[in-house]
Image (cartoon, one colour):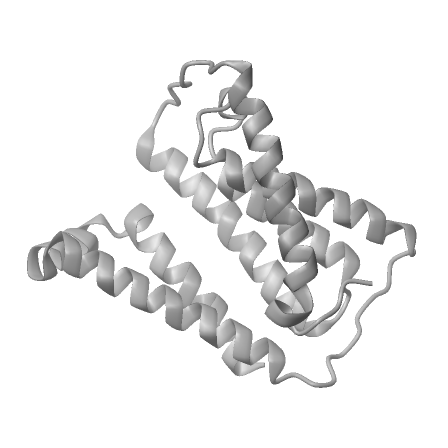
Length: 187
């Protein structure tokens, strides 16, 4: 469990540095340059992901804290699909960005909440609860740092269709790869 917790903490700290520690970020940029900073950032995130994956997989018998009704699995899967749509929307010019300032972080919140709804064990609480708390903190801190929100232009409808198509393909691919990626089959 310690490795999983360390991975979630490393992920959170690395991501929070630009929002709360501008002086540290500027110092690292000065010492490492733009590419060096991005490289360090990337290496730390890869380490965090590996720690989370291996930490998750190292817990053979998690403690079950709660079990929700079976129908919540269907709701959870629908919410995960919504999260994937938001993930994809963050990289495109879509109408979603007229409504949500942070579609990717909102997607992480929904993804984490859906997984907590479907999995009531200790390792899920650490991973998905930790990622959800990080995403919420990140939204608040980025909003504070960046000030007033300027909404982007509204794109044409073709972007919305493209968004849905890409999101569905990614969602289906992740559903099929989930046992390999997470070591847990979707039931």
